[in-house]
Length: 200
Ligand code: MN3
Image (cartoon, rainbow, N blue to C red):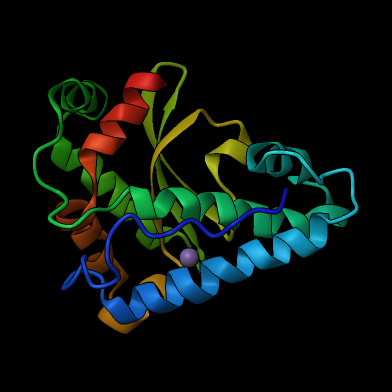
């Protein structure tokens, strides 16, 4: 069965002023949609047809002959999660169990946020910043382009932020650090992140 573009879990203008309706119109409606449409074309009639997105991401990663499939499958997976990692009136308090784990592994919530922003800012060109649970420990990492912790076998992803320019250029122009700070402080759905942490 073909993959489908999931609907946004909130209205297109619900994340303003931190992420505009125009950004979501293009980012979800055009960029994410193109990954899904392209992936469906690329897997049709191949051994990947009928596999889950996760299976395609892990099976195609690192194979030059499957670079196109990986890029689109990776980005489809990344964006499916990205919309759910945000919510209107996001940011704010982190649920207790997750907050305690962040303090235990990073020293403080502020240090985790600092490391996350640093990962996103230092990802040269396009890519993602991530918070993962790897072998029982929370870690911040970054990946280029459509890569993700799933492809790298780097643990369970509980949060990710898209640092491709299409994610922030309309609202923040070149100010990627400001976008990453706004993402953490005003957009993240920490309840959902805590759910993923509890299940990891
Ligand atoms: Mn994107």
